[in-house]
Length: 307
Image (cartoon, rainbow, N blue to C red; front, side):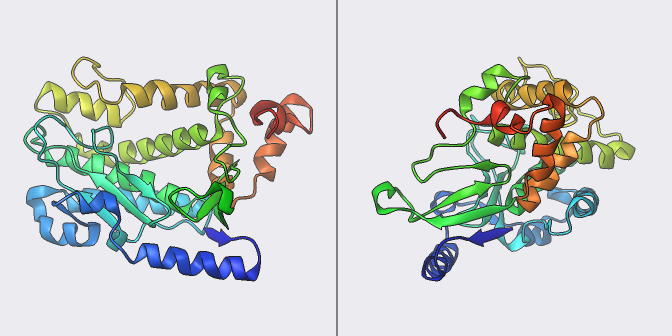
């Protein structure tokens, strides 16, 4: 969900400004020769490149579950989600590869880099990884964001900025309500952007694992087996597949530590997703107020000093 703030004139400017940007091919894609929209990729792929039936079953289940949390959730339009082949012999590709993908809100597109086919021979594994990426990026795309015009004094690359994103807020100069340093205090505190990313990854992991369990997908090499374990959250051999280590240590582990500490009943996970989609943080604020028996608990736990 995306809304524009400010005067009517500001809102009109934001609308036309973003519309113009979103009609052009973004710079990250201009540098990639082998990319195509998901809609085109699926039509071309057939069974030799990806398991379409498996991909569709995962996405359908994810969409159903997320719409039950908030009916405003939508998967990214397949015409605006770009799948990039990976032919770099030095890069295994995928979510944790060298080339960055993800959801770009300014351009309103998603980008996913496939695992390199020369390394991964089981197309089901490539399918699972792409499905996980698509769910992950679709949740970010459906996360509430409010956009304002950027004050002239703060102009950088763009003339607008995202003031609220899910459960976090930001000033024009980039200062976040929740400090990056907060994560060092986990489980007592955590950066809110990081917390959202961890929750998103956890949800995608659960759906991918559940929907593929009946297929009993196994790796034919040590690398394939390690990637499957990583996708399913089962732990993995770090010497074989080291790319996810940074994300694991900086996002997944602090998020799990934080949620396990505050929520023995596992209700916080869904509360955060609901607040992300709606932009209404009153439910999560009330949750932490109850934990600390203090109405200012949200600020105590998450707020950067002098924000």
